[in-house]
Structure formats: C-alpha cells, structure tokens
Length: 118
Picture 1 (cartoon, rainbow, N blue to C red):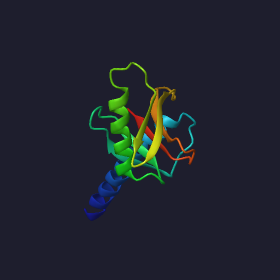
Picture 2 (cartoon, helix red, strand yellow):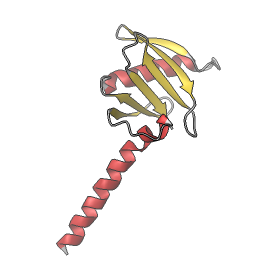
Picture 3 (spheres, rainbow, N blue to C red):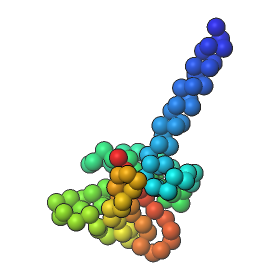
Picture 4 (cartoon, rainbow, N blue to C red):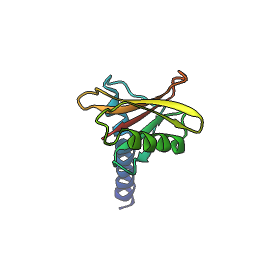
C-alpha cells in the first residue's frame, strides 16, 4: 500500500513541475528549453503568465509588466518603454509558435528579459 502512496505522490510532484515550466517552453518558439527562465506569477491586470530570466528578480518583473500593461492599455500600440527602479525596459509584442507573446528587454542592452504569455 505504501508504494502506491509514494508513486502517486511522485507522479503529482512531476506533474506540478511540468505545469510550472509549460509557459516558459511555449513562448520561445525555438523548441529549446530555457532553464534559466523562472515563472514569476500572473500579471494582476491581465492574468497572463510572467516569466523572467535568472538575472531579473520576480518582484521587478511583475512591476515592469504592471507598468507595461498600464502604458499599452487603450493605445492600440503594443510597444512601450517603461521605467522601473531607474531601469528603462522596452516592451513589445512578438510572434511565438503558435501564439504571440509580450517581451520586455532591458533597454541598457544587458540581455535581461521578461516574457508575458498566455
């Protein structure tokens, strides 16, 4: 009986891990895994998933996406530059495979990026 409980628990943990990484793999469009990207939570305004590379704290990523959502709402333009904690972030919609997603990159060309996806 214990092996059934253990195998069920292991299966549930494996499924949970797969679900948490699913948005990250789906947005890249390259088919390659991006292990340095972490899921940060959902954007409060849109409910979309927010992920960030390892050099961007999740708190910062959520602030950037919140500012981007406010700047882009009602304009019809999906491009915006927002400033959070003294850093400028350039955000825009990009074509994924198959669905589009939003991406914010550090305008200082540091390679840091944030992804917003469904």
